[in-house]
Image 1 (spheres, helix red, strand yellow):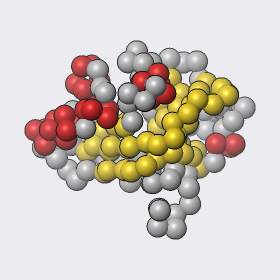
Image 2 (tube, rainbow, N blue to C red):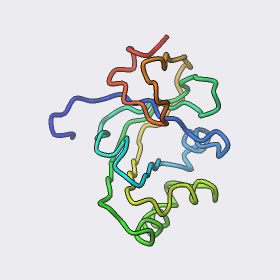
Image 3 (cartoon, rainbow, N blue to C red):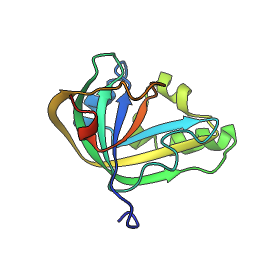
Image 4 (cartoon, helix red, strand yellow):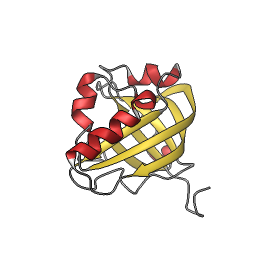
Length: 148
């Protein structure tokens, strides 16, 4: 499973314009991606069995669904070509729009997170006040600590 590590909860912002949440819930999309020029969140911080809580990046601040992390791939430092190729290879699971493809493909470090048991849950609001640099990934440890 996850080498005796504690299961962590994460709040993950999804691209509302690209209907990421809808595509996860209807099963077309089974993997999410994050990437950067350096090793930033969630690189190395998300593990098999962790629970991801999904929120749209449209300022409504409401958790609407969750999923369990099935597999995680943290890339080594890659060239732009290697990065683009990795994203293309996983596009069937990622289902990225052209804009999303441009955003992620070509980054030096890519994190690919394959999901299982994606389900809609009763919506709830979270308190983001302890997360100053509002990134699109919040490792909250336990969802109860941010649930309002």
